[in-house]
Amino acid sequence: MHTEYFETYFCTITCYKWLSLFQEVNFYDAIYQWFNHLKKQNAHVLGYVIMPNHIHILLFNANPQNTINRLIGNGKRFMAYDIVKRLEQNGKVKILNILKEGVQENEKRKGKKHQVFRLSFDAKECFDERMIEQKLDYIHRNPVNGKWNLANDYTDYIHSSASFYELDKKGGYEVLHYKKITNEFVASDFQNAQPENTTTPSESPVRDSEVDYKSTKTQSPRLNDEVGQAGTLSEGESDFQNAQSPLRETLSEVGFSATTPSEAPVRDSEVTNHSFINVWQSTQQEFTIQTSGSTGKPKLIKITRKQMLVSIENTKNAFGLKKDDTALVCINSAYIGGMMMLARSLEIGMEMTVVEPTANPFEEIETDKNFNFIALVPLQLEAILNSSHAHRLNNCKAIIIGGAAVSNWLLDKLQQVTAPIYATYGMTETVSHIALKRLNGEKKADVFTAFDNILLSQDDRGCLVIQGAITNHEKIITNDKVELLNDKQFNLLGRIDHVINSGGVKIQIEQLESKVAAIFKKNNLFSPFFITSKSDTKLGEKVVLCMESKKVLDTDKILSFLKLSLDKFEVPKEIIILSQFERTETGKVRRILN
Image 1 (cartoon, one colour):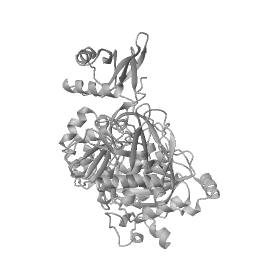
Image 2: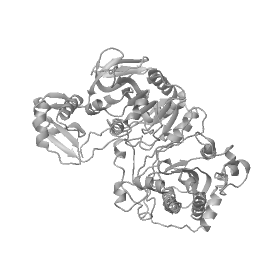
Image 3: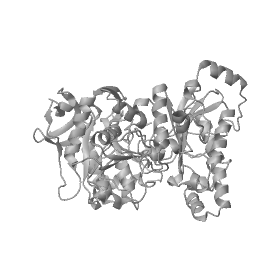
């Protein structure tokens, strides 16, 4: 949670489904009233733009009794209440119905009537004047950027601080110049301020989204100002009684970190969308990136810009990507997969739309918006295929799947997609994927094929060794056991440390999971599962089947049809049912038992 004061934050508030609610009800006066209210709380607007469907604001919080989360959250509630009132007064029944339909079922039971804003807001700390100036430049150019054409020149747009900074003229609201933020100002102003705390922390638990991006100052590539609804925790939108709501269930499935106010971290600026793009465009030569931690404790590693450019070129050539292609970035850019989607779009010159990593990223993206290139985790692909948006995948040049294995059930399901879908093999150390396997269509493959500039070999354990320009020509020794067909192709057998020694019989977990998946499919059982082990006095280790289900499962029946098809030592000696698996932020299941 953003709890710091005497600091400046770049914040964004967006209307539900990108409806132009501010324009629809001429809401600009109410927003300026909110700015005045912030000033009374010793929170000062340094820059802003009010667009038809969203607000960007640079906010300096000089009040230790208030957090950015609370200031923005309270403002959203105040504005939501007034927007609904104005819509009702103007007879905007169609829009009101859309807002009603947006309320989640659990919120309806609490009496909530309208979803006026996106479920989350974006707040990024600005660490220095250079970053503040970058954000101001982006804010001020927003009205004439991308699809917007709200003025002939950005300084002409009245609902912005552009004329204040560029022409020394007051716009719709007189902001505080960012250069006036000094220790003396803060001290004197804070003494004279009388904060108005309308709610206590327990009454208003506002959460932040932490991964949100709209667009940034750049001419090539073009960056859309079209961010789909992602939502973390609901903030009471149209009335004051409904501040609290639970996590959206889908978030934990797809690698989005949603935390409570006391727990939520302010993420390292290098791994957020805004900051990565700024850093990439600064031509920084070295990047520190955190691994996902799916096979152990997360760690930080360094990769170079040169390596990233090699990876970008490999992907570009593999899929025929070119300038002005459209890319959807909907996976977590704190990790290598999402980060490289941003870098590819920037280097190739693709037009990218960036959304938070929700289960189905298409839900709040305009229905006529199509993409040439998309990266997904398996759970996102599954959610899309089970929705009315499945046909939108067919417009892609390529869809890449990573972060976790594709189940047999999902493999069957994705055959309906005509666009090519590829499983990827790679890791942070190899700067994203270095090998691809086509999963559908006439060119469906059984093996992974590495890029031309990648050389593959095996160590004495039978594990894959990777070398090439993407690794700075150093050997990356993996723990992945493979059947190596040649120096470019391989079958992935499983991790060397995913072996269970049960009664002297070595069982490769991934191979057993593949067998179990086939058996489950045959018996119409589609619950997520994984195989693990426990110590056993007789066998040394025993096979354990762990299943995810909120429903009661008949474990005796499950065990009976497993015994019909599995070898004696492969049959699970214990079945454990969990209501929800623990997952990493990239969507991989943590193979641990609590």
